[in-house]
Length: 169
Image (tube, rainbow, N blue to C red; front, side, top):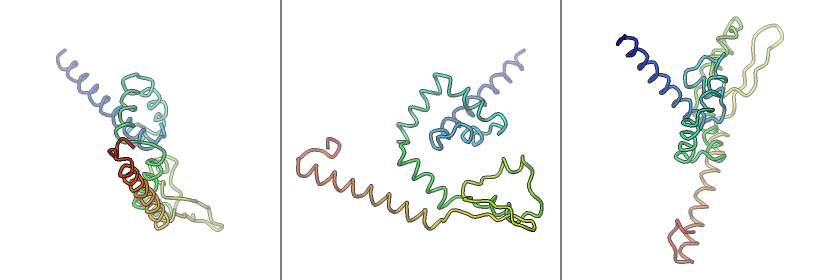
């Protein structure tokens, strides 16, 4: 009996940790299914599991807190996406391009193809895989960073003119 309760407690702790990981990924990605997969749920049930988690008040509150903590606004999500494009792994896309046989549906589901912009089946066999431009993603990141610096400078100027703390402007 004690062993069963101990196992149940361990399983609940693992489920709790997985649900919390899901919440973090959901805030970062904004996609229920992808967040659930990243948190370790099987792709076949990921969307359903993610929705179950989001229905619980406790996790809705956690998501709200994480959004506040991570300032997960559209601009931040764009920047996160650009970071993934600029610095993310491309190994699965390369494997896809170089494989002799088409991967199974299950193998495709497990691949990280975020950096892939286009996949074409080539006449005569084979696959053409195109990737997003990493340099262009980095240039966009620099543009966003420059805009943020300009806003900070404008705030500082306004606070100097008004004579208030920057937080009040």
